[in-house]
Amino acid sequence: MKLIETKFGAPLALDLEFFNRERPNGEKLAEGDSYWTLFVRFRTGLDSERTAVWYFADWNEANDAKAHFQRLDKHDDRWAVPFRFSEAGPMGAELLLSAGDDNYWPIVFEALQGADVIDENYKARCHVLSWSGNENIEWLKECFGDNWDVAAIFEYCLHHYAKSSLAYLAAQIWFFEYCTEDKYTVGYSVRQLEAIYHGAEDLAQAAAENRRLAGLAGGANSKNKRMSRLEALMVEIERLEEIVPLISEERVLEQAWENLEKAREDVPKTPKTRFDYEVELRSDRRFSGRYRAVFKKTA
Image (cartoon, rainbow, N blue to C red; front, side, top):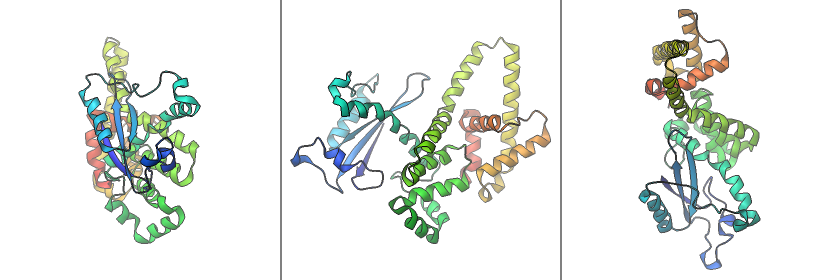
């Protein structure tokens, strides 16, 4: 659970007119007033995580709602959704059907915060702005107006993270959503982001299935070979640690693959398979800690 305060008029804030639509005249809010967003993430077993979002104009109401979930032994995000569209009306039904489209934002912000690109207030970190430079920032302000910092964050990630990384995809989604309004690219990137974000969960399910089929020697042998290649690739990446601050994550991975090809013959050749290996290094607990330790210098 996470409870966040936002002021109307701030970047990415809710539309004030929409928020006030159903509020009595004496209770309408104005620019600069605060509202609170409650994010509640749910997961059952190894199912994919789901995030439900609620908005409150009063801090006490928001805090009570948070406490409601803390008291529950079993959580369910359906309690706030009408069972029939007739209860919500045509506009309400339309909002319910589109609400799921925004569920990726918590993942976007979590990825960028985890990469130390943005702070808890969703602002670019000082080292990101320093890398961008004052002259470039002025140009970004002229081109992108209030969303200049979103463009600066994306430019930073473009130079410091592989295109298959969570940080890059999160920054790309943010940029294309607010700076270019390219909905097609946003949708495509969201699918990639969610696939990588839930990768550890998928691997856990695959591992459980592999244990169930442990008697199949062929499958076990194939898994062992894959793990051997993953370990070898991780070692090659670690050998390049000293040059990590000097080049992008994507270029480090390319060099690691080139070095690995010289050492063994069973290296995967296709971009798709190599992409899968890179995702596994980032998400599998056996490698993810070592991987982050190498690339922390780029943040």
